[in-house]
Image 1: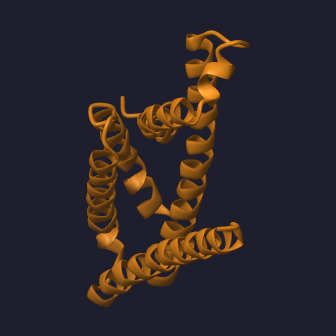
Image 2 (image 1 turned 180 degrees about the vertical axis):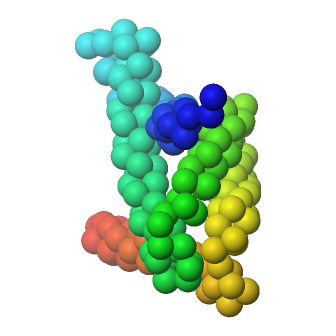
Length: 185
């Protein structure tokens, strides 16, 4: 028996796995930073070492989870819009076909735990997982697409994600520069 909802929890698990791997790496950097500036020893007066590490990990996992869940929401919306604009499928069969693609992100999240001590490794795994999912998405939905529809869908995905990521990087640089400019040096 094949149940279409069998893999419905995989996106949640993939987000949790990627969040844990990112959070463990950030936690190690944050602990070193707190030790270097002398705050960590003061924290030990109120909490145990394990308590501090656990609290930081839970906080970082929650933040990573929220960011990745927001990206998942944008990805689902972008996929739906791409299918709306370029697909000849009006019944939603393409969405049912790509549902099992969440396994790709689940596997990528599990592999990212192996590379949890390297931001570059996690980034490469996440990027590779995303490219594989994009290929899977286009392949599975290609039955309802013309050649121009496939090109349009790929172009649409690239433009939307490039605009979003470049915009976020631009805002981050502007905020960083404004903070640096406001510091009394």
